Amino acid sequence: MTPEEINTFLAAVADGFRSMRSPILHTPAEAGLDFEDVTFPSRDGVPLEGWFIPAPGATKVIIANHPLWFNRAGLPSHLEPWKSHWAPTGNDVEVTFIPDYRILHDAGYHVLAYDMRNFGLSGSANGGVISGIFEARDVLGSLDWVRAHPGLRDAAIGLLSRCMGANATLFAMRQDPAAFHDVRCLVAPQPLSPRITLEQTLTLAGVDAAAHMPTLESLIRLHNSAPLDDLSPVGPASSVTVPTLLYQVRDDVLTRPSDVQAVFDAIPIDDKDLFWIEGSTRRWDGYLHFAQHPARALAWFADHMK
Image (cartoon, rainbow, N blue to C red; front, side, top):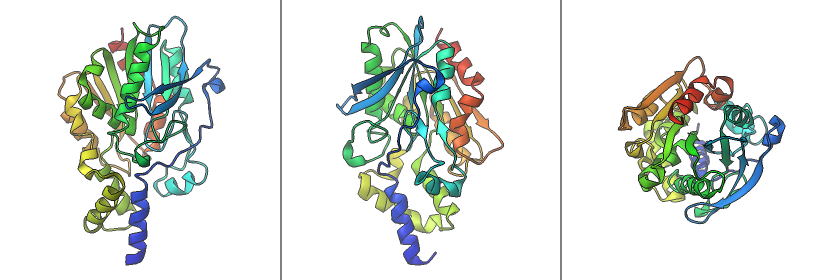
């Protein structure tokens, strides 16, 4: 690239730290699931929109937190403009989370799936800034909703928190540890440090990451006010107190294995596990993994939510 093209590219990457909403193109009805449209406030009052999918007779509930740029239904990255954005990394395929909810329902869990702030149909907040830190308040709001629901007050709670949802969950654990006192366990696919994925993004584009990361970091800070390393999940992972299962596409072109390993190593409890998805470089395969191979995550939930 020419210097002008590099500057344009850096500005476009920095803009990715502002919300780009995607539409909700699927509902649980497609999988034959009864569900309720629900709305509830985040801890700071931002209105959040979601689905509650009841499982008759169940005494357990899973709260599902979605990845960055996704919503509770998934991401239509097989359609424009998302397709062009993700095609260079091979992630121009649709991800739908409806099969995940069917699997959880059939395994005996109520499910709460919702859109985080600035995504899906939930409220706008913080100028559209994406950080994981503000979204932590949404995770706390979802826990508050479950505990206040008349049919769920005595239910065992588990969390399925993917990517940004995983980061937000770890930040929430640091912000309010007491809110997780009765959470039985966490399954957290693909947490991600922004610095790592940005370095990978520059390298994939043929841009010298070492030379241009300082400029990119400055541009991002103009958007969200936060130093880049403050957004990493590695630090807040030290606040985890619940049994936690992580998994990650090992050769994901948008990150490095060392990043997820660092998150895992920072979790200060013995009841934790990490496994790798092999044979792919596509990050989206980590989001599709549960629907295709749910046994390991379901076993984690079953073992810890008895």
